[in-house]
Image (tube, rainbow, N blue to C red; front, side, top):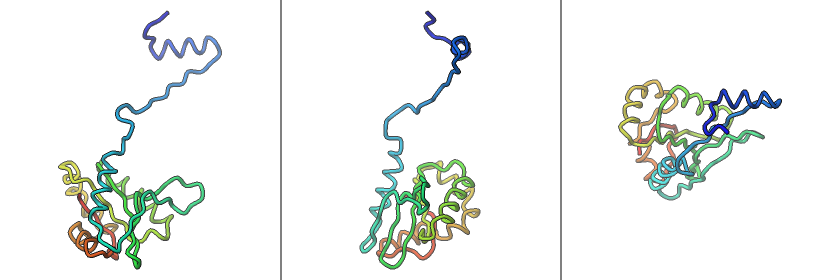
Length: 161
């Protein structure tokens, strides 16, 4: 009996009996891995004044598509889709992902990117903010002022919370 076989030994043993070895990796740590994102969405929801309502996990209207907006808000006149990011590591990938959702969801309305206020994210946004300006024209202050008045902004932007 081998107490700690290497991957190579496992593969050779599997081949010897006519099998193919397969390895799966599972995330370790707490069972709720989106805790930071859920807390960020709760902070965002706390900024909303009536008559704005919020829905969480809004699926895209494409049959079989598993993508969803993290939230959608409405004031009865306008709609905005919300993407919450606890950590920005690749701004281009983030923009492509959101652009794909906007393309596939004609009811998306404005898109508000809600970002966790951390030193890392402030640095990331300082480096890429102007490149994201066309898709997210408004800055956080303008968006939050509108939401606190109970109005969904006409265009999207980025909010640090």
